[in-house]
Length: 268
Image (cartoon, rainbow, N blue to C red; front, side, top):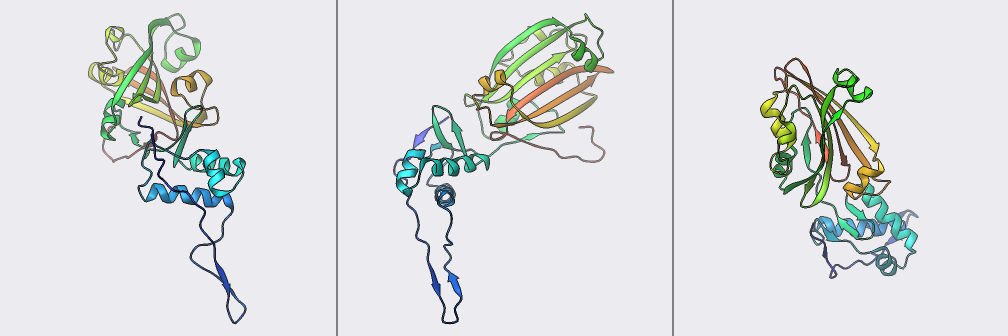
């Protein structure tokens, strides 16, 4: 991620004007009076919309904004907090505040590799394999996959990144009968989705999407704060007339969005 400090960007409060007509009506100019935190927000958004601040550029700190606008740090913090909630900026604890990249759209109804999705939105994919093992199925996962207690299955957790920044924490359970060589693959070279689509074509898929608070261990990998909303996509696929995979994919809401399109007569 490019963290360019645009120190030349100028942030100054704009004057607000109004006048009294001869008939006693108060008429405001095109610049309407706003609360001070709204003035700060508006100025930052104007810098972004005008292209003077571009994605990944550093946004002035609370201290600098407070000084420029003769405001309290609490006021500056509110402005930055609301901009982050609106997806215009991202705040990384201990690092700084930066202009957000446009949210990429990821396929929802189509089973598609995260590496291809990242490439489609102009990113650079890399990943870190956190878990790749054979395990004994738990009761909960066994119920979801139709496997008896004590059955062995494959388990993987992969952190997918765009330019080194985590965009998806992907946990997957695989029925060994549909992909017996799953553990032998190098998932830094091929994604689990690409491999599984090659050896176990999808007959049917089920998706559940939820907005969730991210578990602490996932937050640590995605490098987000506790109050950042996340999208969780839970997917179950069938292949060779049996449940092939049960997957959970978690992404920061400010870095990622899902888009679905359905065409009658397709099997996606």
